[in-house]
Length: 217
Ligand code: ADP
Ligand code: 5GP
Image 1 (tube, rainbow, N blue to C red):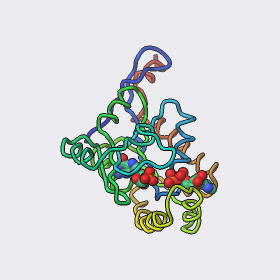
Image 2: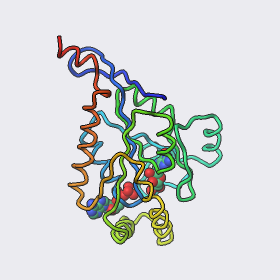
Image 3: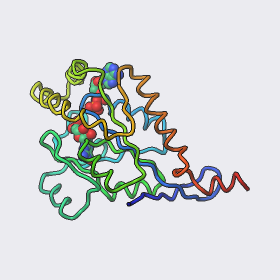
Image 4: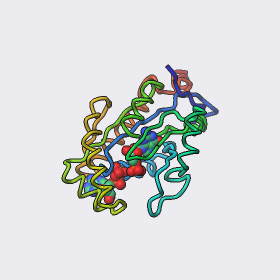
């Protein structure tokens, strides 16, 4: 099974190696994943979100290559044919995919990586990488999910209905994930997510062996 190994600059001395951690985070649209991830990225300088490719139209305020790389269906399909995606899926009628090159580059630069992807994409990653941790974020109820999607104000009424329908299906996929966070109170949900990141980094198989050697010497 493939594993991402990163060359990571040790803050202690010289260069050292540790396996790059991959955090796969899935949630039905509106559950609060972007809000939670934004806070994680603000707090952890060595954690980056992999910017996905998509054929969906940009929402108001979304920037190309920052929120997504927005491409045509033709370009996306060419990328599929050339094997350029670590995973890809059709979500809400649009194509979304994680670039293999971007993933490798981020890890080479020494970052741990968050993949904000759907359940189908997560299944594909599970088959390819054995060093990922899977987190599913649930809303406290369908009623609140609808309220949040409406409050966000980025989608039409029709799109909100479509997203709610899909949410029911997606939420059934939580069982395949290592952790489930119920996003009722934002601060509590964030603390849970942060704890998962910290504990993943302390796992024996993720630790930098050179750093441990330095301690033992
Ligand atoms: P997602 O990225 O999962 O689609 P967002 O992060 O955009 O969801 O959140 C959807 C809306 O719900 C946003 O307006 C956000 O501010 C709000 N929200 C997120 N988490 C909470 C929470 N715990 N309590 C109340 N509102 C929340
Ligand atoms: P949105 O259009 O609301 O930004 O995202 C819709 C859904 O697409 C979310 O569930 C999000 O996790 C998923 N998604 C975003 N990028 C990717 C990707 O690269 N691959 C897959 N499989 N899903 C993605």
